[in-house]
Length: 453
Image (cartoon, rainbow, N blue to C red):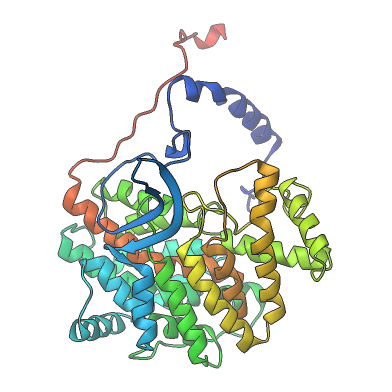
């Protein structure tokens, strides 16, 4: 009989308690040694670890008297305000993700000819190696799409005739390939999961030529392959707004750290995927959706008083997952507003009208209005809080009929653009392996011979 090594045995439980006891570091020691936990200072500002031209997040401004005050959030890709980017392609009634990828990778906005050629390059690369879908996805179905996605990325190393060359040209080739393939890798992994673990019918759609990334994702995900123009437009907008975020987020920092070791592109991207999988990073919009489902099952959501009481109970760790959080409200950097949330809100409302979900959108709006006041009162916080990008993206994905299993992989479909830009930037400018310092706070002990212990 095959052993089950996934079981935590009494021995492991005992040794885990010993390990926990011997790995405790007193909180006051971090202050004593001036260690910024989580690479954040006492005011919550990120510790500067590098320079970048890829993007910037702005949430504060300096007045003439030198006072620094919160301002409405601003996000720029290569110096261009993302609001202007989205306004540009939306007013032209075209898709914007491919233009955004071009800007992030090459540092300039493309003209019509350059954009057309780039889109053709991406479309031509949406072909997985022969038998890859069968051998790497269908024959090894997984229950977690992010793990399968990571495994597929690492497996692509074996199909690359020049995987270890870290010249900019070769890394750019690999990056464009991965950007093109991520929709298929994500969706096919989900179709495999649905078939082998959920007993659903299996279908695999091959991508069509000349479709945008957003259109491709919806086409290969849905059995009918059908989607409305508004659905594709909103998914495209979400991809644009998730493509990059300032360089200081966990997965992008992971990309810089791993790239600095000189490793290959596939290993770097797999490491970033491992970071994004973490619920503190890439899974927040899932939490938002599940929090609202719990709310609807627990109270009368047409009663504002009951909504207020539920939000208070969330903060008091007496509702939902008892974590003390109102998911989707507040951000580590933004205070007055998250520009991505502002842009998604408008289209979330339009989609709710198309899908007949006006009542649910209204509930989200009520929570968005009440939560900041309740958080300020209960937490005694004077830093403003507002809905963040996860607040509306989860609602949008739900209205699009996307399964929650694909929420985080869809994040990766977008963020691979930013990771690629940062990897190329690290290769060109770093020159040293990133090696942070840790202070040892354990005193030396004498070795005791085994026979005397």
